Length: 156
Image (cartoon, rainbow, N blue to C red):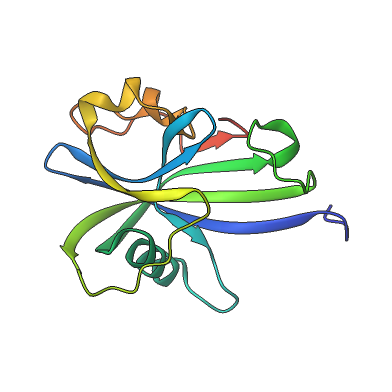
């Protein structure tokens, strides 16, 4: 049941693997650099495919071709280290396999809070990287194979 105190947000995330590397947003906090999947909140009336395209272009300058849904994760803020000040925040993250189309250097960039750039991280470096959600390090092999169930639960 959703109450007026509970906010549920839908977020589309892109799993973009190209030539042995994964497209990630690079961010910084007091503990150093970390990585996140590009993507973000779905706007009212916007399709998930359009959300993916818009968010990837804004955050990375990369045009993508959205594909199939691969992972679903609940993010309930009160249960995680990056909990927002709003402990009632609940986000459902839908992670889609996407293909790289091209880099658009003239794209209007809108970096997320703490984002300092974009990186194509080698798949072989994922296990050592500070990646969120960290469960992805177990689910993405060094060859790009995506393992595991579709629904991941409220995991980090």
